[in-house]
Image 1 (cartoon, rainbow, N blue to C red):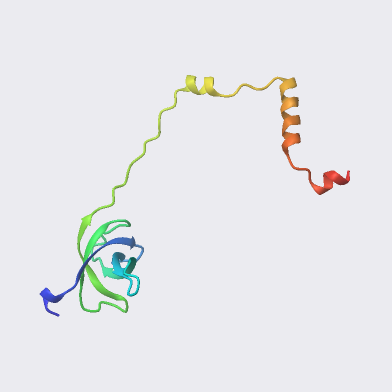
Image 2: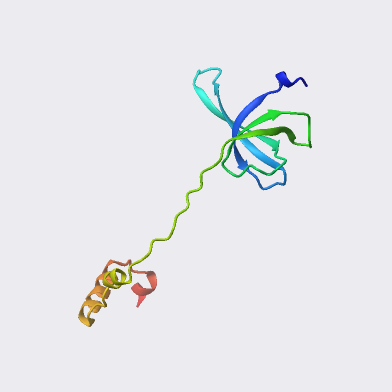
Length: 131
């Protein structure tokens, strides 16, 4: 196949679980034949990634090539944009502030009234009705 005739697509990597192979989803729009509204379509291509450089979520450019396996007829030309991974660092907790915000135990009288209020709001089951 002549180099200038090869199809080129840009899509997102949706799977990189195989060795030297990625699945690329290319999103495109097609006009409905009767109503004329644009309908979104997704095509999935198996592409050869020799260095295993692509990761899940990357935007890649793929090019059509000779059949490399039963499903693989495309290869990754370049990674257009790597997926950005945000690193979230745990916040240092101030022990004094944490101790102040912890709930104090309720006095005995308030515990009983709270339990009665909960019992009043809960639905009555068949077993309780028969007793």
